[in-house]
Structure formats: C-alpha cells, structure tokens
Length: 165
Image (tube, rainbow, N blue to C red):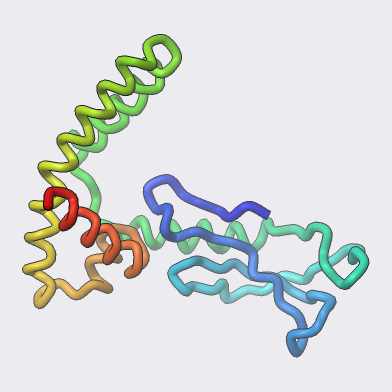
C-alpha cells in the first residue's frame, strides 16, 4: 500500500496502521497513522479473507484515510500561510512550468535552474534568522508553522544553512 501524502506537507506521510490483538496475526483493526507520531483515535475492523501466512491481501483504508485527512487539515490550519500574492505566483509558475515541460523542456530546465538560484540566495538567510531565533521559537513550533515534522524542519534548516558554504 502506498503512503498518503499531501502536497506541501510531504513529511507528514500517512498510512493505515494495521493492528492485531496481542501482536499476533491475523490483524483485527486498522487506524490512521502519520510520520509525525499522530495515530487516529478511531479503529476500523479488518474484514475479508487472509492470504497464507496470516498476511492481509488488502483491507479497506477509507476510515483511516479520512481520519488522516482530518489530521492534515489541522496541520495545514496551524501552518503559517503564504501571502496570497506569493501563493498565486507559485501556482502560476507551476502551471507555466508544466506547459513548458510539454513543449519546451530545455526552457523548463533553464527556469528550474534560475529558481535554484533564488532558493540558494534566500533559503540560507531565512535559515540563519530562524536558527538565531531558536531561543524564542522552539523547533516544535517552527515545525508546526512550516507544516513539517520536527525531523524534517531540522533537516530543512541544516540544508539551507549548508547551501552557500
């Protein structure tokens, strides 16, 4: 089963956590789970036939996915919103680059290279400011505002700090 991912919140990868009584097969219930450590409060029974060896061939993940989606709605609501004009520019840029990929992949690659230059000049400065503000803004809060897990936020800061060294 492929993990669930919401665009812009990739570190909050979700799955259905299949559980069994006393850790033994066959599985009896499932619930939503997220890479951030969240687990759904609701459990859903696992129905159907089991394949040899006690493993499940498939199971319905509709309930766990719905719970994870609600969790992600809460994650997104706590994240710092982009200004409307920046969000609109990014959407327009994505659409334009998608069109270029179909008709002018060389130009799309050139644009991607230009964007890397923007990231290389902006990301390290922002990471430096946020690293200095760590006393005021703990990593857990920074991660929440970025819509990431703490591990992903720490990795992102480290990446940007190293970008221009």
